[in-house]
Image (cartoon, rainbow, N blue to C red; front, side, top):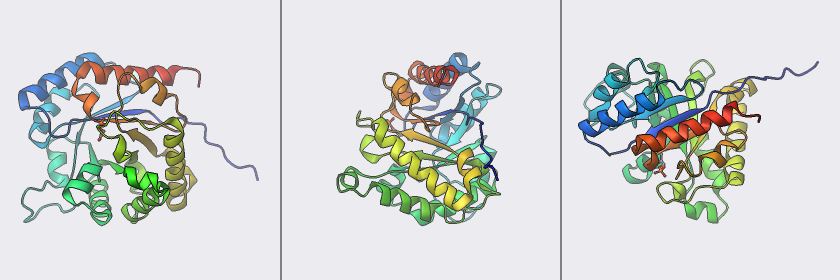
Length: 266
Ligand code: 13P
């Protein structure tokens, strides 16, 4: 029998993670600028993750623009005595469509484990949110040849409840910890190698068709200056941008370059 080949292309995505930056006034002004700069971008899916206190206000500004609102974290229960936490239902209520899960800053600074990632992922997907699960190795782990094992373990545990039905809203972000906020972007070879192993793992747990459909993106010192090289990497479906997303014109330039690469010949 001839194997079925899928010829569809995954829609590229650019996510701006504003982390713990910007006041309400700054966040809404940046969102306004972004909607002016990117309101007509259709080929690239655009997502902005402001700090919790600005979610609703930024969501109001983005309404009707096609730019989606994301949260940077989520709890796994719908409600309860969890001081300082926010549930998936509350995020949806505030206008979120997407959530980041297991960002390395959550893991390394706040002790988030793969088990928490697993619970958060299932909860977010169950509530209808799209979830961006972040994985990546430290510099020491890379230097000692553990990158593949570390990323595989994060996926194995974090996606342990994977079932095809729920996982059509899953994205994976490969964010090597040594590349985050350091100005040291991973090379094309490093990114390709890890993206390939991520897709292999997805194929193993969800089957080849789902693995082919899920977007795998890169994060770590992405800037308007290096996005053209990144966009040329085969099997890179988009970027998760920290520092460079704080400037609307810089983030817009990143989106436009991704868009151009998509309309190009490769
Ligand atoms: P930088 O783009 O500042 O390196 O941050 C990457 C990141 O952590 C995005 O989630």
